[in-house]
Length: 389
Image 1 (cartoon, helix red, strand yellow):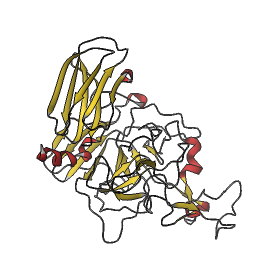
Image 2 (image 1 turned 180 degrees about the horizontal axis):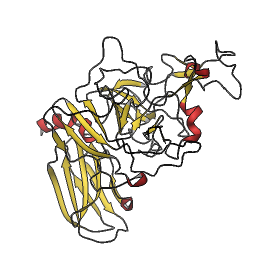
Image 3 (image 1 turned 60 degrees about the horizontal axis):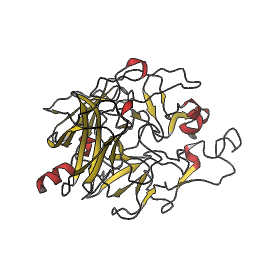
Image 4 (image 1 turned 30 degrees about the horizontal axis):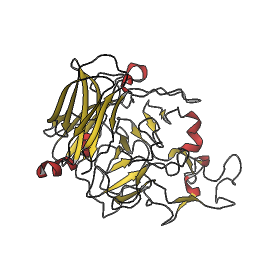
């Protein structure tokens, strides 16, 4: 199994996407989440509508309406640090969440008196138009999140390392808010704290005096980065070991406070750590033409019907021993399938019955897997499983 372990650990850029395998729809009946994941040795191509599987809207004071963006993004599978001039994070989409929804940065694309000096904090100026999932549509109908996507992952679970919830255009992963205390993968799980703080200023050069209308923190320039203040660098990331990258990777993190409220700079900020792949950013971007031979990845973390909340797989992550139980579920004789990241079936058990716990052992098979529950050829659940040792 040694060869497989190394291969599996290289696959999170393929395995992390929420692939729509059930023709599910979201807002206005538009197909939701990621439609297709294709890949070559060097790149992953993600096709998505930019419509999530969770309910979105309404958007107070925002007249825009979400629309199918028909995106195809190109993400490198071999991200590298940019040792030259860093690429500035601009406006529009700066990365993609694992459900195919766009990531925007902390800026709302406007400034005080349109002078380009005091740039407006989107969370302050546009936050009232965010829906319950903390997203809203742009004028072109592009639904997006400037801050931690509340409905994409369990942001209140501080007991384990957060999952990958997105990728930046330099190919490095974006994680949820919780990680190991130490960058070497040791220590308890803690909420990642950014290194930014509000400057204690009584005036703003060529800008408004801080008051109730323009309080400190409403402009990006109100903040300063202090080395060592938090867990993360000025880009809101760090080089560290994670469950998906046990040998270490640079990773960005979303930042929230103890009450789950977004904390500046929210996601990635300033400039990209790595070399950016062309075609994903700028006007008209996100419609990459695939000009190389690719394969279709067919075993991503697919969406699950809403009635599967009583299917439990625990613990996850695990050491290889875990349990599957179907509580208060209609029907019987369910099938349990477990696949590795290449789509190979490695475990099968038939005739599972409701209310009974089924122990499974995959010890000495460290890596990423997908647990699938089926009934009469209908997939009821496909959930990512991480085995740590």
